[in-house]
Length: 405
Image 1 (spheres, helix red, strand yellow):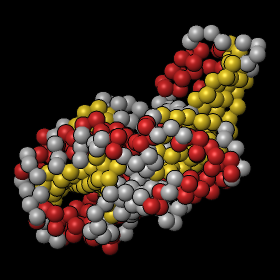
Image 2 (cartoon, helix red, strand yellow):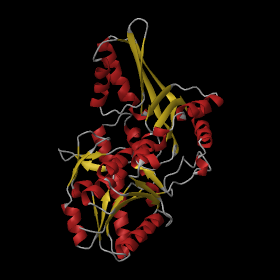
Image 3 (cartoon, rainbow, N blue to C red):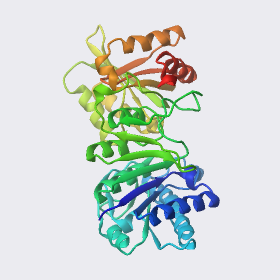
Image 4 (tube, rainbow, N blue to C red):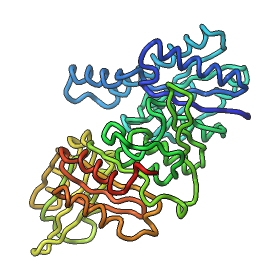
């Protein structure tokens, strides 16, 4: 089927009845311009946070299956209200949950991954001339239980749908006008980028830029889904995420800051093959993502390993490491929060030596201590104290002259 556009509207875009009506008008205009429209919607405003708070008022450790059952209701409210708004404006529309569409995931609750999407129902509804509204952030597993995809999962839903439907464009509509060189709330003169590569966008999303969910960028890159980030509050052109050649790109395209970081350390591990595997496979079995990793040999022939995780995984990580460290006969474990990861990203770093040194110099000038460092071809990340992170971001944005892009 031709002329399919997938749009995703974030929670701020549908936070009030007035905003829902505004979104409905935008969708109808696109429909009347001859497009077949599939819309993915997040929960209204802060309703997901409100539901999480409600769950924790019942129990400090809500079961993940029941938490998914609860959180999935937020999107169902949004899709129903948006469908009502569109219907009242004279267009044929239908709202569908992930189960009704056939969005199938693995069995990991609260952090599920999409494994398959059945397009039959959506295509049938589009052929009837309907606008199709799909609940983002959710799926069903092999037991027909509701799962959720984690924070930002509606982006992933939209890109996955655009991929299987072979859509001509996937638009992520949010409360910002595109992808910026840094968070405009931290850097007042941050500039909107007209284009950015999939690789740069994936790094920025992974490193704390909240405009797109990392898995959505990964999917778009893997399946070459045309991706546009733009505002739902005006008609301005946004940022196109593209597959442009890296060698033609900027040395540094953005500075990111991630405050959702905690550090875990395992001390005095016997230095023998398979030790790192034992630690990180145990974490992987729990669906816990690990980022910055540093391993140091001690004088006694033992190893210390430190790594970062998301703050919300700190409790599970503590349980896993306590068990594994006892099995390995380590000297102990330690956990630390109050940290942030500050990163620079740019495709042009590959061919420009000295970029990391320039970053370290800037942090030195601010007397900011670096606790961990990781690098790739197009990024350098430093773990610093959280209370110095925004200062570091502003300094790096200035040092690399990103306001002049």
